[in-house]
Image (tube, rainbow, N blue to C red; front, side, top):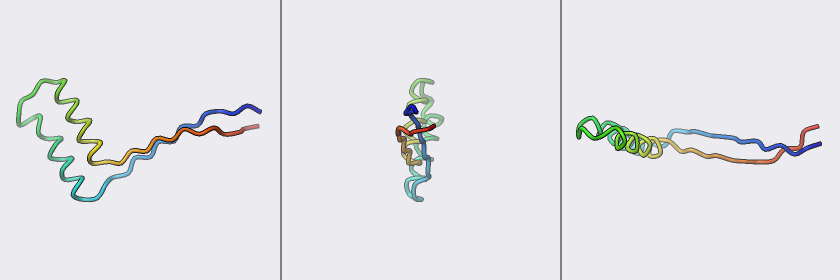
Length: 63
């Protein structure tokens, strides 16, 4: 038996105020006409505001 790594990713939406703030942040690059690099960074920030992401790494024993 060998221990194997198992990765579990949970993505759950946050409460309403955080979702609205994330939506506002996500639309801001189109209003400000920013560069594509800045737009990607802002979209990632908006995703992290609107959603709660948990990543877990565990070892499981499988026969």
